[in-house]
Image (cartoon, rainbow, N blue to C red; front, side):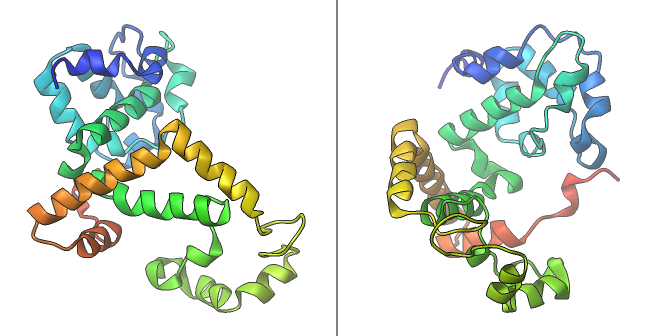
Length: 231
């Protein structure tokens, strides 16, 4: 693909978030992610401003664009009302569409994240659901959460939830009609296609790395090196 800047400029988030950055660094100063990660939103916007395809491509393949928490603290202080968080969203979208996300460790986490989040939404109607949160996958949550998952129904009942029950209430069962509507929304808005794109490029990368797609996804889910954090 030629002219990556113009491709970014097709994204409404980019148009909304990018306005002649003056490189003051205020966004970096207030950014929570920059406190922990090797992340500098000012440099991201500065790189995009060059309109240089090689630099933008390197950014799309980097770890950097996956550190942002999309909290939009940046826009609250920017004197030019730039929104680096929106610029990052556009970069992430383009990285996925071009398959560049598989070139970074954080980018490869898109596969398990996509499966976990979309499966929950389409199966249960929730982004996060107790049925898909296994303690074995999140041992860092500690013994209290282990006990909670082992006594899930009674625990939620004590908290007043209507867990997988009919009618209103927290964690209620979402009617199939509503789930069908969610699936239709995914189909119409490109969500279903996005899932397929992530899976397709992930399968190619798994083959390149000599892994099965199951090994690839598990490694992306479980492994994270120390290269991402500030010293």
